[in-house]
Image (cartoon, rainbow, N blue to C red; front, side, top):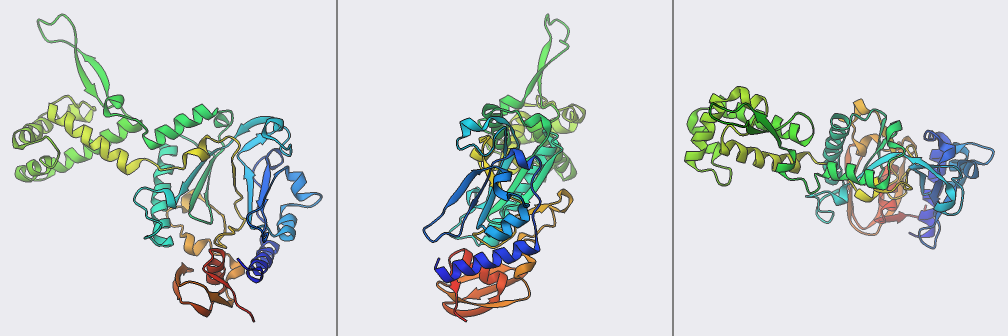
Length: 393
């Protein structure tokens, strides 16, 4: 990035912060703070600051408007002395549980082929899956959802019960969300049932309990059985034969078992027929493919992690790092809602170094090499990502 572009972006970031002051997170004075400057010699991270070190006698808005940083961070961890120069000297008290979804790392996303907008759409789906897991399976209540301003989303969990979790405990949460090393047999419960006449011991049946991955698999099996029983027999048999290892005979037997044992299936019993057990196993694999949350594992397990400040600007896009109300997540469009008002209603000239497309503000701008006049938010985005430089006036 050349000097003209760097100074332009730094100045406009300062203008933004004079108009909009982000709110600090809870227990701001117990957290480490850091930021990245607009230095000419590459990325310079300034860290190991307490909140008081950062703001001095002013407030966060004063610091941001004066320093005009490229990126701003605070720690998930809370400390006795957050401004100490080493982690060992800080005196760890506890940490928020933070989840990071990065579009570049999602299964099925190709950063070389997919557009920025396409990657963010995929990431939005992953966010919704993550929130469902955190709310349904963990019953977390104090959650903050944030668009990162770049390639994805953050979720901060601040329930009192998570603050003291060790790295190992956080790793177990990660493994659960990813379905790591989870096998179908791990979620099946074995239940004793009364033996028939002549048996000296009770028989056993395998069931899918309510809740967790077992409950999700059970729900999918219930829905699948409902679909089978709603169509004619030939169509149901063909649908069953799509599963590996199930021919026409097994398919017919499984269909009859589903019809004749509907109450047992409703109770989670997958032992009504061997083919039903096999189908449940297949559906479990589909559940893991469809409903796990592909989070960035090191972020969640790192109790000292620095994470972006909601309300700040992302120096790689010029978009806002934006808090999203939980009820508004479904409708949130980062390419519209995270465009700062500071960069709207004004056109600027940029020199396009390489042809690119910018999709922002509900519009698509095809930029070709040379000088282009574009809405400022599109120009800031192209400059921040290195596709353009600030043209001379």
